[in-house]
Image (cartoon, rainbow, N blue to C red; front, side):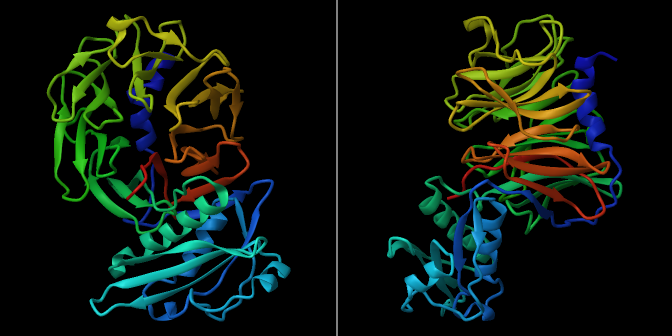
Amino acid sequence: MSLMIRLGLQTLLASCLIAAGSAANAQLNVLVTGVGSTQFPIAVATFANEAAAPQQVSAIVRQDLQRSGKFTNIDAGTTPVAEGDAVDLGSWKAKGANAFVSGSVNRLANGQYEIRFKLYDTVKQQSLGGLALAGPATELRANAHRVSDYIYQQLMGVRGVFNTRLSYIVKAGNRYQLQISDSDGQDARIALSSPEPIISPAWSPDGTKVAYVSFEKKKPVVYIHDLPTGRRIVVSNQKGNNSAPAWSPDGRTLAVALSRTGNTQIFAVNVDGSGLRRLTQSSSIDTEPAFSPDGQSIYFTSDRGGAPQIYRMSAQGESAGAAQRVTFNGAYNTSPRVSPDGKQLAYISRSGGGFRLYVQDLQSGTATGLTDTTHDESPSYAANGQYLLYATQVNGRGVLAAVSTDGRTRQVLSVPGGSVREPSWGPFRQ
């Protein structure tokens, strides 16, 4: 079997066939295995009245900040501190906290829960503002993540991604599940369950839909799944294999890899399944398309040079100009993903007999390995470009992992007793 065939659909299918005994709808466990070289010390007080709420908001915020690897939590004690209470910022600074958070959670007359909080800079002895967030009990976790996002942006200068979602595939018994969870692996929900494999989930830019490949028709077919309604449509069921869907930034088009002409090539198709058009024009295998953030280019994997490497072409296809090779570090590079700012390329490189996650500066061409694992696959950038989610193996079991783009902060996300693969990190939520 050739390396490119191994890279292609058979490999993706095989990755879904790993036996897993996970319980349906199991939550992801998150283990932080590394932290940044410099962490920001912060104290998050217990929020007033949150003991009566379905979720402990301050605990979720502390967990979020710790997972990021950017913060260290200073013990704030158990005494609740409301956002309107007087705060001795000097005493918190003396305890080692450079920032302090106070707040409250109150049930409103309409049954919703309102979170109010304030963030303080204890060094400059000033308030950094706060928010009031209201919603039903089912939105408490999301609103707690929004609190964390506010803190992250105010103190780190970058928008947080705590209130984003993940998609991934779990095999439970004899069924395959497309699951959607919060960024911390909690509140996992099954979007689709099938006796046949599901692979390659990809979020729409607005976060309301996921495209994926399902084998329920006994062959790979590309679907778009509307998450709020559960409705789905067939986007590509061409002759042969239909695989590797990738959204254009405007959400109107999918790039897909089709074998309808014999060898796998890149095509574009409208999200309603119309307007199929061929983009690559090679006699080799072209697969794994990924749009650049500005929508002007498509990166893809091809063996047209003899071994798998990553190339870039116009989003209009090779009729607008020949594709150009992008990766030159290593003899086998696949699975391109471009950072949200368009400056960096993540990909999987065969290194020392294993497969590792790399990032390449697109201007300088400098490539850096981010992991020490050997079964990495399916990289996906966080919406703020600060982290990468990918699939790998730990002790022979499929897990998800996240690593900061500087390689210093790492997390492992696993399903108890089972394997999980094919991750995709969703966009910012409003």
